[in-house]
Structures are given as structure tokens and as C-alpha cells.
Length: 97
Image (tube, rainbow, N blue to C red; front, side, top):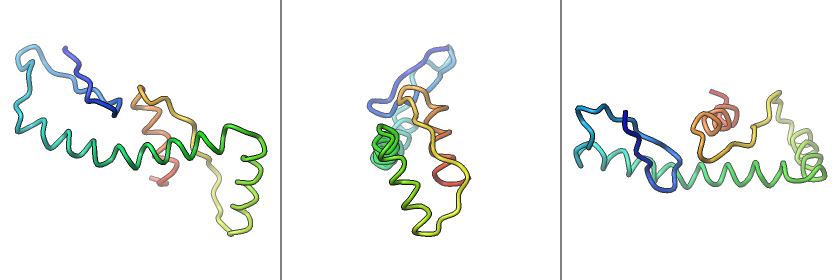
């Protein structure tokens, strides 16, 4: 297996030895989709990082949740940008999928 990183997304594409270079017609839609999602994922990641970086921010965030009347049991975990599964877990909690 060969892995290839797509810039600034932390996503890797695994290729079999028989097809070690994907065709541009395959990569272009993948790259466009990842770039479109990258901005949103970055904003969510930075928001979670901001709230989790201080106890006071966590408390204010919890207070705002109660004041607005949002009921949710889970809080998004802080992810590691280079590990796709931690990004998936963060987004999974944020979107309630």
C-alpha cells in the first residue's frame, strides 16, 4: 500500500501497488471536496480548541447552553488534525450523526 497526503486536510488516500498513481479525473473531485470541507472543519476545530483551552471558557459555554435551552449530553472532543478518526469523532458529536 502507498499512502498519499492531500495538502492541509490531514486526509490520506491509500492506493494499491497495481494503481500507484490515481488518474487526475479521480483526484480532482476528491481534492475539490476536501478543500471545500477544510474551511468548515478548521472553524469547528478552532472553536472547540478555543472553548476547551480554559476552564472559564468551558463554564461560560455551559452557561450559554443552559440559557439558550439547548439540551445535549455530549461535548465535542478536541481532535488531532493528522488523525482522521479524531476529526471524524469531533464532527460526529457536533452534527449529532
